[in-house]
Structures are given as C-alpha cells and as structure tokens.
Length: 172
Image (tube, helix red, strand yellow):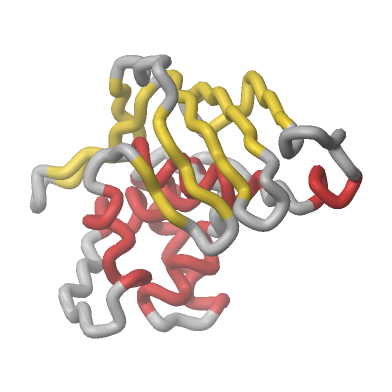
C-alpha cells in the first residue's frame, strides 16, 4: 500500500523496506489463516491541519508494536508548538501503521468496517487471533470481542478464560 488517508493525516511508505514477516497468534486451520507482521517497518505521516510531518520507525517485539524512532518536522518556516505535539495522536498513527503492514487486515476487521457484513466467525482460533490483532495494534481486545460477538463483559470474560486455557494470549 503506498498511501493511507485518515481524517487527520496521510500515511506513506518510506524508502526503508519493511522487515521480514513474522507470524503471531494461533493458526486458524479452518480458514488456513495466520496473523503476520513485518519485524520492522517505517512510515511517514503528513498532518493536514498543522503541516507537521513525522517519520515513525517501529519493530514488532513478539507481543506488540514498539516505536523505536520518531522524527518530527515542523511546518516549513516555523518551530514545533506544544499543540503540534499534542495533535500527533500517536496511538491512532500506530493503529494505521498496523493496518497498513499486517497482511489480510480486513479478514479480521471487516466486521468493524462494513456494517452490511454478515460473515460472523466464532471459532476459538479466529477469536484468539482477533484478540492478538487488537493487542498488537494498540486496540482494546476485550472491547473488540464484546462488540464483535455482541456479548456483555461478564460473558466475554468467561470466553477469554477459555481462550487463555488453550492459546497463549498476550497480557495487557
């Protein structure tokens, strides 16, 4: 993907190639799907409102995405203001980067993006993968499962206990 548009910024690739893809989370044998992410990746962000640009370099630790380098450039002819730094919204930026670099992101998140989608998958491997995807990308795994399955928190907690008994899930 060369460019991703958001309401606040545009994400683009840098000249630095993504690292090798590594697998994470359980394998879903029913769908032959496995979560994968590059070991390292870097993207540029151009913020529409402020004119600030940022280059964010990340690595995958095996459980989450970590920022290893952040370079911020103010709008030409001005310095960085506190407001510029506050408006970066780095958690959303990391989420956008994850969406850009994780192959087949839509397989796990289509339900969240397309209200007409009716292909609910509820096998344990898929649910554990969805938990991993949310955790890795800085989301809220429990809340995502609650929303996906339309379950109350108490029932989701029981589901998570069952999943943790079978699959290694990351800790928050």
